[in-house]
Amino acid sequence: MKKRIWVQLIKQVICLCMVAVVLAPIVLTLFAAFKTKVDMVKTSPLMLPALDRITFDNFTKVLTDKYLLVGFKNTGILLVVSIFFNVMFGTITAFIIERFNFKGKKFIIALFFIGMLIPSFVTEIARFKIINGLRLYNTLGAPIVIYVASDLMQLYIYRQFISTLPVSLDESALLDGCSYFGLFTRIIFPLLAPATATVCIIKAINIINDMYIPYLYMPKNKLRTLTTFLMNYANAQQGSWQTLAAGIIVIMLPTILIYIFFQKYILAGVAAGAVKE
Image (cartoon, rainbow, N blue to C red; front, top):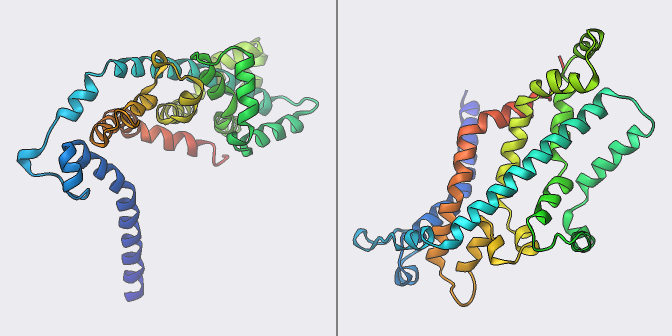
């Protein structure tokens, strides 16, 4: 009994430490967002300033910045277009791979998995040349093509989910005169709703948080996203740690809200294809 209690106690301590590691950067950023430039130097990063010195000027500066709306608009466009094509191509490709046998199927699957294993930074020079050759550099099309083509996570999720759907559904629909297109659009795709919700949420969080691709491929001010918008407060001329912290909090809120409200769909979608009945 004592051994079991000690084991549970150790588990709880480990969990609390993990929570502290995750929350500490967020709490420190939140504290910094309410400080003045002087307090950033004089006070400990682990403490809020005195109540009479707490300021909301940093949030005011961020919320009144004209590029914030530009960032929301461009990020919204990237989200809608990228997720649409990810879902469309992901569902169709996964359906064909799982339901049809054709020559070279294993080779194609192997290519998809190799594409998932190779780090994107290894192929960055070649990718940059391709984007530039397509004349997509400094346009919203550059990150859209990259988000759709380089991340194959949705293919894995859809394949796992489709593998749990009985083939008898396909056979019954085809016997009733349904075409393959009708089978996919009327039966298969609606049943993929949990997996689609998972893909949409994960993709949305990844796109919102991504700074590297927009910063590299869209340097124009009018093409700023929410993450590259923060670079304005981190440069040498206008650098302001407290304003940067406020900007991080403002931009982080949509991601946190998306995860809080839809986390059950993420878990359901990922686990749905884990076990075959």
